[in-house]
Length: 71
Image (cartoon, rainbow, N blue to C red; front, side, top):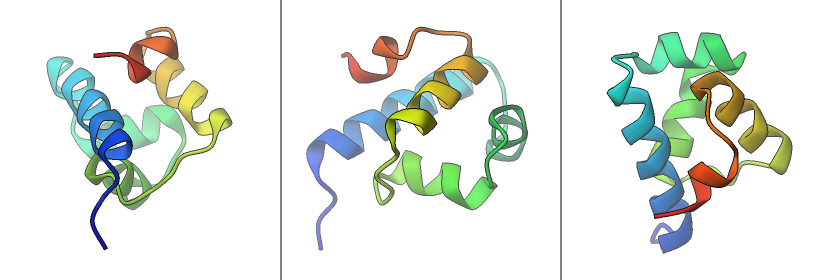
């Protein structure tokens, strides 16, 4: 089953912000209090995160949640 474009774009944005900070998936997952495999799924677009998780990711990255949904 193909990855929906909106999930792929969201995951790419999370990965972009994470790598800009020089963080590994494991380090980022720890900051966001999530499992590394879950973060990997988000970045690949195979996971569909809830609003609570989106806010947790944004907080860990130090950006408004809206920044994860734009571009």
